[in-house]
Image 1: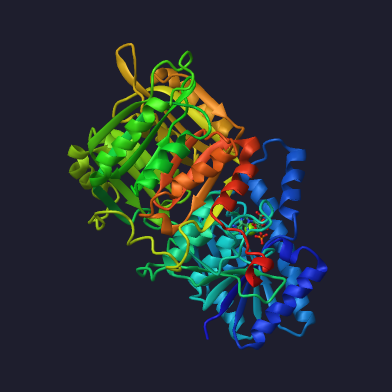
Image 2: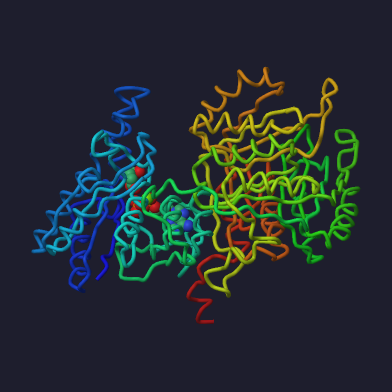
Amino acid sequence: MAPIVQKYGGTSVGSVERIQAVAQRVRKTCKSGNGVVVVVSAMGKTTDSLVKLAKDISPNPSRREMDMLLSTGEQVSIALLSMALQELGQPAISMTGAQVGIVTEAEYSRARILRIETDRIKQQLNQGKVVVVAGFQGITSRENLEITTLGRGGSDTSAVALAAALEADRCEIYTDVPGILTTDPRLVPDARLMSAITCDEMLELASLGAKVLHPRAVEIARNYGVPLVVLSSWTEDPGTKVTSATPTPRPLEGLELIHPVDAVEYDRDQAKVALLRVPDRPGVAARLFGEIGHQELNVDLIIQSIHEGNTNDIAFTVGKNCLVRAEAVAAAIAPTLRTHPESAPEEAEVMVDREIAKVSIAGAGMIGRPGVAAKMFSALAEARINILMISTSEVKVSCVVNAEDCDRAIAILCQTFEVSSSPVEGNAVGIYTAADPQAPPVRGVALDTNQARIAIRHIPDRPGMAAKLFSLLAEKNISVDMIIQSQRCRILNGIPTRDIAFTIALSDAPDARKVLTPVAAEWGFGEILVDEAIAKVSIVGAGMVNQPGVAAQMFDALAKEQINILSVATSEIKVSCVVEQSEGSKALQAIHAAFNLAEISSVEVTA
Ligand code: ADP
Ligand code: ASP
Ligand code: MG
């Protein structure tokens, strides 16, 4: 019988009693006849304490020594859990990542798994033992023997990778919540448990701040079709299934280093509407998209760039057949968006562009690999194709380009990423199938307060600038999200320029500033603004594809709380807004309530 992989997180093995409870649960699974491989994290907050210890010795410790240090946390838990199992009369053996042969690339603190040797584990399973494996760690190779770690939260990745390599029956992630909820229950106590969610939705939620599962673990589950479930280590409840379509078979060699892009997609049936110089105050996006939603017009991408003075630009795309009505809505609203004639003397201006197309690269392998988007921008730049809008999600980067460039863009992208066809014409309904057809359009909401927003003013508007900028950041391993180009074009010294803003992890902000400052002058960029006091709130759901009014409902919820939206970016299955950090929790709660995601109270159920 295929083994079961169970993973227990820090809180689940946080004390002697907890370890004993885990041992009981593992023993019970063994009794049902399954071979069990257990992956554990370090006990409680051990990893945080080790990080602090290192910082007390050295402000900037070497990454190699950090991995040496942090990997010890998991080694404690595997030994203790093995002992607890043996105490129950259950044969068990603990193994470090090196002992198993979890072979990773030679990148300390963020290594990706290349392959997992399964012989030793299988031998032990055949002898009737539970194998307890240290999560979060690996080894560079049998010759090199360097200890690596996979990055914080990496035990989830170890568990799912082991399940893929062992062709396990399923991978169970035990944690301190009953499963995957509509949002973090620490921030919204009435968050509701979901019985199932798709890998695509979970990938977005995980990378937008829902730390219940690591996005890399979801990526592996999606690529190898690992049956995955998240559940409480305290109860017997069934938890949440993370579902995936049957994937095309792929080799286990290079496990986490697979081909990053699976497909190039395109959509010629799009048109762009931009509203320039709308006042930078709460309620504007809600009004515009509320009206668009009333007209049942389905918006695809929405982008709101960083403000200039006290006004913003908002741009969106719609199907070509909706353009006339969308333009009429925008044109009707524009004159009313002028509350302070002295400070914003010009009224909002509507611009439409019917001759556009969207080209996208798609694939789960691009997660956490900043170089992939940069490579797309470079390929387009080399073909002298100007990018009009950019939209990013975890598994897709889309660029809006001039319609006349569409064919060339497809050809160059297929060549660059070695994909021979571009299978999807039209929108993404087919790709994002909801786990449950009855599911509401928004499945979950997430808050990420560990983000910074960088804006660069006055970047010359010609092909290649985005490529240069994001290649440089990719070289420094800085992942970028929510890339937004301003719609407004400023002529400076005869050169048309636009602003580009993007969000990155807060911890990368100092590095980003350091690498960008020296090149800014050389490349003719203007001022670099770094805002660390931001939060990103997002809604995620496969059902929002082709469902008008979803974004409007989110903007409306924020407007009712008088929360100003600093930037907006969307992909097919998510809408993210940047707001001030101090308003993050309030924003999350408002959105959660607006989409009726709360647990239905027992009173309502019986009523
Ligand atoms: P573990 O130590 O078991 O890996 P983590 O702390 O990494 O646990 O992840 C579990 C935590 O994730 C929960 O305690 C919860 O606060 C947080 N969380 C954030 N978003 C969600 C969500 N949508 N559903 C469930 N938990 C969430
Ligand atoms: N112990 C590691 C951490 O705290 C890995 C994990 O728990 O998944 O990040
Ligand atoms: Mg975790």
